[in-house]
Image 1 (tube, rainbow, N blue to C red):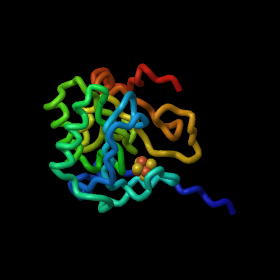
Image 2 (cartoon, rainbow, N blue to C red):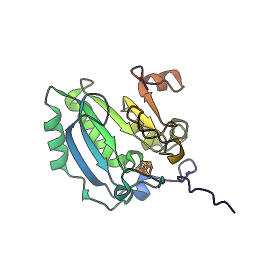
Image 3 (cartoon, protein in one colour):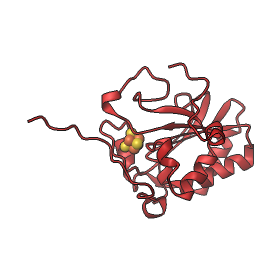
Image 4 (cartoon, protein in one colour):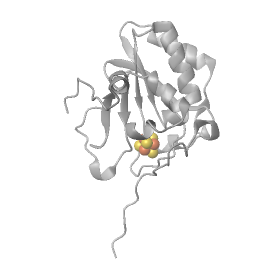
Length: 193
Ligand code: SF4
């Protein structure tokens, strides 16, 4: 008998809430990297993700208690690092940024306050765009502060290491402001592959 391959978890709308799950822990912070989106970026990896995709690139950070608590010192360090002219923006990764909205909203608000729209914000999420549209207020608020969303679970059977900024072909690089404005998914206009 063939065994069905395990798939990532599929939450119902609003089933998973940051208020219930997040411990506001950070798995890692990587300043000045050039793999987490366009240009040179400062990347924060939040802790905790319930999608549990088989083949996840960062299994340790699925644990909401992994790493260190988010702190004002770290936030100040990120802002300081982002002041460099060559830094294009901030990237939120995980874990799941949309299950850590307390931290991500606070940081995004600070980035907008300090830099306006002179720096951009990218985020990865296991949620698909269509799922986020049915989600809790905090997730929609976070989405509204982001420029580019890379959406969807990592699917092992769709794995393709040649894709720009994505691990599997179901994932999309989405222009968030245009998608919200047009009420449909608008793909990043710099997508090559
Ligand atoms: S959504 Fe991302 S962080 Fe979460 S389990 Fe899947 S690959 Fe890992």
